[in-house]
Image (cartoon, rainbow, N blue to C red; front, side, top):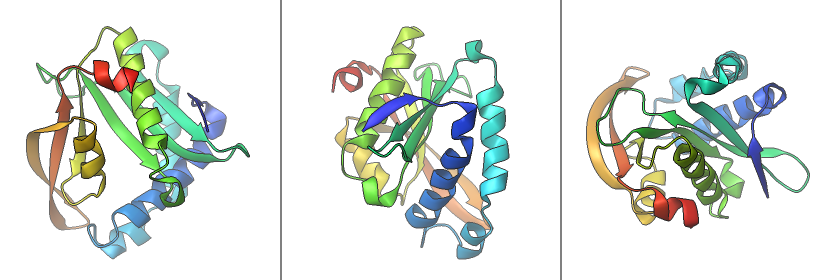
Length: 175
């Protein structure tokens, strides 16, 4: 498995991974109609905007490729978005194709995000995740603690989102 920084040419594959993993991960959590209406094209437009940002804005994206060069996962991180006084970095997105989950790819992506934040002088991080998402176990196993909770609505359905936080990402960088 190879992990590298994403480029504009990766956007179509990132968008497919993003939509496909939403459909598998959030089935039974998010309304089916919302998942059916997800679009590769709309996701691609968003990812082009994210990757077009200035390199010094503190936002970055890494992709994971299998041996054949297919993008099977990605992670997006950067400076925490709402000014949390304790958790200055944020893992904004991490998605791995279902058939590649449980193989250490998520851990590898999380590690490069924590390393990049560390190079920016940021040694704490949080990630927001739907409370019913099976990935909650992943974050807890890596030492994340629930530090915030909020309600949001997706597809007309109220859902609870929690933030897992790491006050010190040193263990993530060396795992």
